[in-house]
Length: 465
Image 1: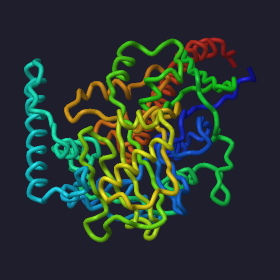
Image 2: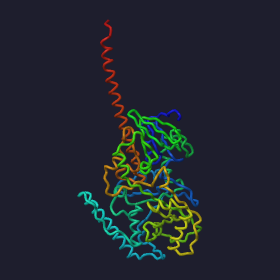
Image 3: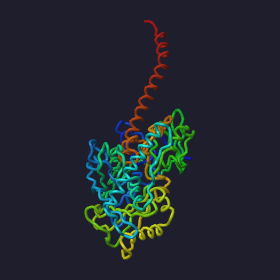
Image 4: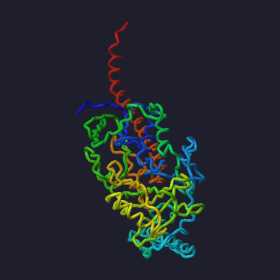
């Protein structure tokens, strides 16, 4: 192993939380820091890729929560840097549901099924609240069974489009959502944050405090400091470490803690639910699907829940791109990640031919992100239930000695969102700064106790004039 590199603070992970935390620390005079990032770029689960001649967002792609009584901090950054976005209107989604023969369900049937699904979700929520108060198991309503019911259930619960109950993001920041449609990418905001405290030139980060392709495998914590060891046997030592890896990574065996984290911490981490959210991009030689107002999204009703259910055309974001996106989640995401792109393309084309007929053109290209199999992410975002024990979130966030934790999964109000990650980084760095102040006070007090008897001894031996 090489000789240890010494700094005051180590930050593990250069996603939104890690960068926002480092920025605040630097603004408060803590510039002796190092950021260890496992991948080859900053941004974490915000990542773009050129596909079909345009920049598409593989991970986070929306600014969720705009137009409310409070200002979404990510929306403020979008406005500050002029990032191009387009409004996502979901109001017509329930009326663009196709059956397997290509027919659209009538608006009356779709509206009735949608209302029943919302009512059922609210009843389940009420039953869960009562069960939690009384310590009993909750009573659930009849689960969805028909293809239409399954599709609507997927829309309500998996796509985060139409929540049956209010959640903090929409209550605080507003109900509108905007899709990032900028060639610079959503991660441009992360780079602009980094520019405030890291050395950059011509859009590239040159600062040696940012270490890309440094995979952290061990974190040792002692009373006096921390030691971090990377996969290539580099050693970094510091007074504190701020861990901003995803909850999926914390649940995996990528990073080992020595000594092991306490049981209460491990139990809280294991209780967190991780959602896998996969946007599959398909490029076509020309557009064959409906376009115009109310046709940005369309739904496929299948007897297997979540089977290529939610489709989006990219014409609003990138006119003339001829790209469709289909969203899969959880079990379907993991299934598709495990198979070849050729098999996924075949399945997707079969679904599109069910909806739009056998004579549509074949896709010329496909892009399948694999967030679950990415060992540096192990999922897309945390998915706490609407009714959750806040103590679990607080335990996940709570520091262990000189090890602090941050990330969207540590946000009590906004877990799962980019603004949650951003605010979590700020909050965690504030807590770290406060701990530094307390530590300095303890040191100063300890030093004064040592100096007091020495001072008294010196005064006693002052020679008389």
